[in-house]
Image (cartoon, rainbow, N blue to C red; front, side, top):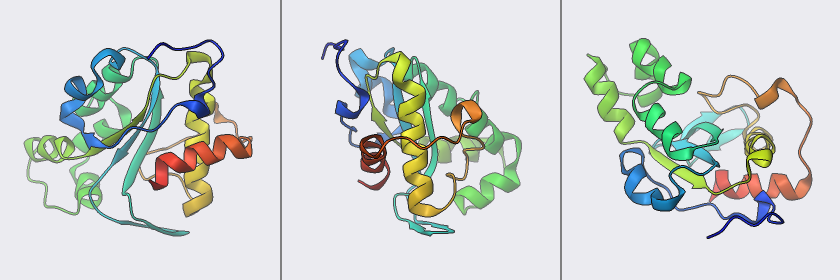
Length: 171
C-alpha cells in the first residue's frame, strides 16, 4: 500500500495483534515505515477509570516501526528496559515470579503488539497522542509503562482523532 500525500492517519487501520517476536514476519514491507504501536499483555489491568480488558502496557510511535519493536524486545527501549533492570517491577507487571533476566525475556516475547502503519512522519506525534488521550479518557490514566505525553503537551486531539485512537485501544 503506497502512502498517499493526502492520506490522513485516521484513515490507517489498526492491524490485528500478534506476538512481539513475530515482528519481521508480520510486518514485511512495513518494517521500516513510520507507525503507532500498542504493547499488550494477556490479562486485564485494573485502572482508575475501570478495567483495561486489552491489557495495554505501552503506546508509542516510531519512524521505523520494526526497529522500535526490535528495541522493545531487546530491552533497548525505556518501557521494556525498566522491566529488565527492575525485576520487582517486572513481577508486578507480569504477575509472575522473576528469578532472572531470562524469565523477563521469555515474558516479553509473550506480549502482543497492535500496529497502525504506515503513518506519515509529520503525523506520528499527533497519532500517538490521539491513542494516549483515548486511553486516558477511557481509563483515567496513562498506560502503566508510559511515563509522559509526547512533546509534553496536554492539548486534546480532535474528536475524529480520538475516535481513531479509541479503535486502537478497545478493539
